[in-house]
Amino acid sequence: MKEKIITAVLQQMQTMLNNAQMSRLQDILEYELFSYKIEKNDSMEEDIWTNERLLNTFLSAKRVEGCSEKSLSYYQKTIETMLNSIGKEIKYIVTDDLRSYLTEYQSEKQSSRVTIDNIRRILSSFFSWLEDEDYILKSPVRRIHKVKTISSIKDTYSDEELERMRDSCHEIRDLALIDILASTGMRVGELVLLNRQDIQFGERECIVFGKGDKERVVYFDARTKIHLQNYLNTRVDSNPALFVALRKPYNRLTIGGIEVRLRKIGKELEINKVHPHKFRRTLATIAIDKGMPIEQLQKLLGHRRIDTTLQYAMVKQSNVKLAHKKFIG
Image (cartoon, rainbow, N blue to C red; front, side):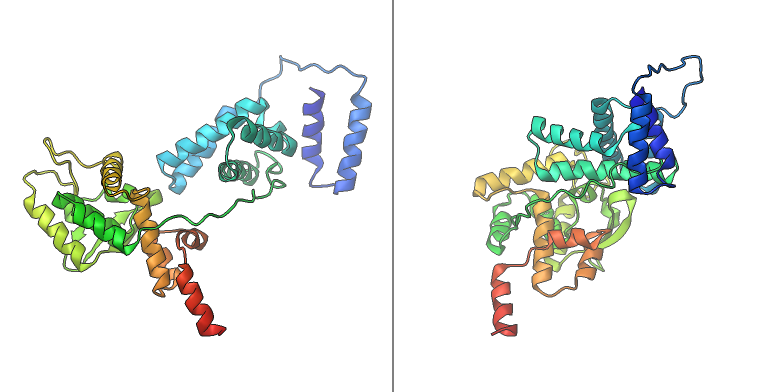
């Protein structure tokens, strides 16, 4: 109880005092209250802003901003786990509580640095929102810096691997599926939402709904157009979905269904890690290597921040060598 009172006083005074004065005030409070026993008066009205209510209010705000339900669910689980572990009211949580939590979480779960930094970012978003909305005076995450991670170069498909996958397709649907992923770079979550009427064959483009229900136009090449038209011409169902199962009742193809199909193709061809997102990364890398401006690639991929685009686009080492010869000698 003493710790809560001291924390509450310090939070109220931190905008008026500098660091040295805050430290001195904390020492005085701890000294003066040391010999006293303090109990909570249960007859007083409880604070209506419970941890649960603050979290739900935060999630509602993020939903209004356009966050997907998948992201909101991840936010909720991450924040609830932290609150249950620390066991304090939000207004009494301090930086050391969060540092200890992240350290213990990493140790117990054997989590990677990337995972820990993702948790830190979510907590930072939560506490920054609480600060902006005046539920707390200062975010305790401010002094917890970004976790340094080792950047690894993720695989892309080679030209040969793409052609081998195309040649191995026994179903025209699978060929059209590979082509549209390879030529548009769209997310698999965007692909499964597409309907036949969304495709503009004349312009070789379609409108997809990305993260946060944001619309953007993506483009496909002539080969994709031909294979997609051939696939649609073979369809005998009335499902409006662009891609459906091969057997009755011809349900819309799901993310899991696409992942399983691609994984099977990769296993048969002994191609390492065949999955939908790798097509997106491959397109980004090819675009950068051919000189597409990063701002245009950002728009094509539907990234809100250009940093994300830079992480996707891996410059080939052979091109680095050629650039060195050209510009340095």
